Image 1: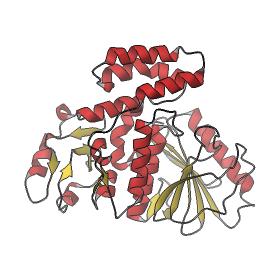
Image 2: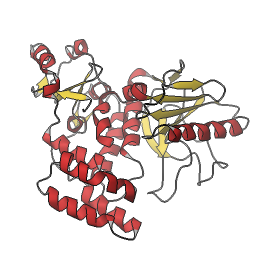
Image 3: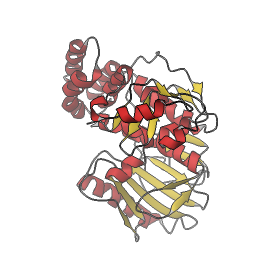
Length: 349
C-alpha cells in the first residue's frame, strides 16, 4: 500500500472549507496517484541500473505502474534489451526506453512555500497559506504535501536548493543515459538540502546532535579523487553547501559517502544512502567506521560523523555507536527524513 492518500480536491486554499472536506476523504479507498505521476512511478520503479535488477523488476513495474498506452510493446522491448550481451549497451537501450518525455506542465512556478510543501506541513499550517496548494496529498504521519508532479513544477526563490534538487530529479527521470545516482539517493539529496535550508539544521535519530547548517547550494563534488579511500581532499569544502558524489558520468565510483557536508561547527558529516537491509547495511556502517577511525588523526581539525540512511531495513531499530560516531537511521526514522518525498518510497521497491 502506498504511503500517501490523495484527495479528490484539486488543491487547498486557505479561508475556505476545502481542508476539512479533504481530511474526511482521506480514507484507504481514496488512495491513488494521478495519471501523470503513474508514468513517473513506472520510470522510478524501473531505474536504469544493473542488468539483473532490471530483469527482476521489469514485468511487475511496467504492467502495474507504468500505465503506458503501449505497455506490451514496452515490455517486449525492455525484455529484449536485457538479452543484449554487452551490458553497457543493454543498459543504454533500457535507459532510452525508460526515459520520460516530461514536456508536460513542468512550469517552474515560483512559490515561497515550495520547500515547506516538499517537507510536509501540518493541517493548521496549511490554513495560513495564501495560495492554493496543488494536488494535495496526506502522508502516513498526517502531514500534507503535493504530488510529485506538482513538486517538480514549482520553484522556491526563498530556498534555492529546492531547484537544485528538483533539477536532479528531473534529469534522472528524463535522461536517456545511465544515471550516476539511483532514485533513492536523489530523493535524499533533495529532501535533506531543503530541510537544512528551512530549519538551518539536520538531525539524524537517535543521535541527539543537531548539525548546524543552512544549505544554500547542492553541488556535485568528490572527497576522493580516485577510487581509493586512502587519498582524499577536504580543503575545498565550504560550510552552507551540501555536496553529492560526482561519479563522472559513471566512469569513476565514489568509495564512501553519497552526500557530505561541513557544518557551522566544523563537523564533517558523511552520509551513505542504501535501499538494502540486514548485512548490507551493517557492511556499509563498518566500512564508514573503519575509514573514519583510520583518518581521524589526519582530520583532527574536524569532528567526523557518519550516517547510514536505510529506510527499507526493517530488521533493527535506528542506532548510534558513540565510539565510531556512526549513526544508522532505519525504518520510519529514515522515511521521515524524506518529508513529502516519502510518497515515492514504495515506488522504488
